[in-house]
Image 1: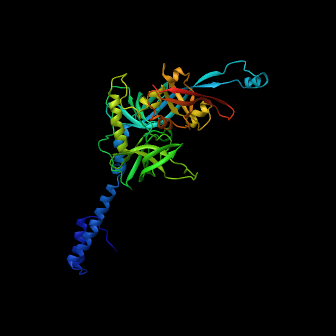
Image 2: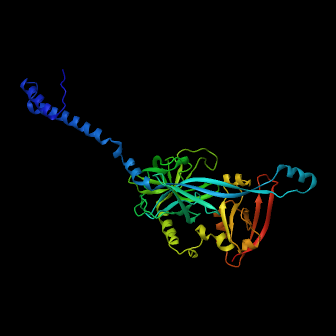
Image 3: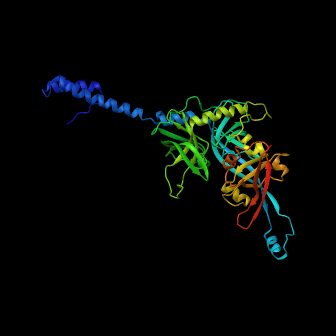
Length: 406
């Protein structure tokens, strides 16, 4: 009957017994049994190393999770509604008896972000916290505490924004001085608030770098690609490697190719080096005294071309926002604020209108407008088509205006 070897001491005694019976020379018997004993000891050590708490992915998530936040924004929009009987009345009598009624509607959006400084500065996607009139930002940290936050700066071209928690305390943060080398095939982890669920984690590999994609007619350049799941609510959250270093910021998921073919495992993130460079620029803006003008110009929303030249703050018309306002989908950009005394204000442009054409070009996104205005100099005249293009081809309330850049 085979004998059980459960320790080195048992192996030594068994070797002596085998030698006394003349089965094997002592040296051979001892060698065989010691090998068995070491195998047994090694298997026990292997079980100890399999503790989930020591897994690199678990340690990396535990390292960064306290710095990841849930971002909830509230935006108040005004929507014009009309009594349907008024349209029937106008059909027969040629005019409306009453003016359209305006209602206020609160739109909410969810996203993620992460703290990059103990003072509570946060980087996220620009489309999560697009600057608009009456925008409220609420930030919930991983320990369940909720804070108000305010918008500092943003960049439509990189889809990055900078906000700050309104609180005087030290926060855990992700260090941007030591970022991931972004090697193809390395394990990456997406951390964020997928579909509103806090502290959601997905895992995959870094599939490609320097990808250029177009989502909803907006072009994004030099992104990193991953097969880790990126879902609504992950936008603005960090993508990290197994050392807890930043790989990038979750930005977009491609559900369909431009040809309409469904895809799987195609998620994209803004590279960590782009994030780091943008944050350095945003910090300079944050350090300026209140009321000072932005000297950088151009990229930041706080000094966009449309605002700097004509006094208009613009916002992309997403499907949700278009539906809420009753505007045609995929057409124009929304005017969210007009500076008093600006060229736009003097021409009668009002908040809630849309810009549908700049010069001879139709526009569907803020980056398009910014690109068309990039070369405009002070004193130049630019033609705009503004107004409201409502859902339904016959509901057009558009007009052409010429504005002189200040």
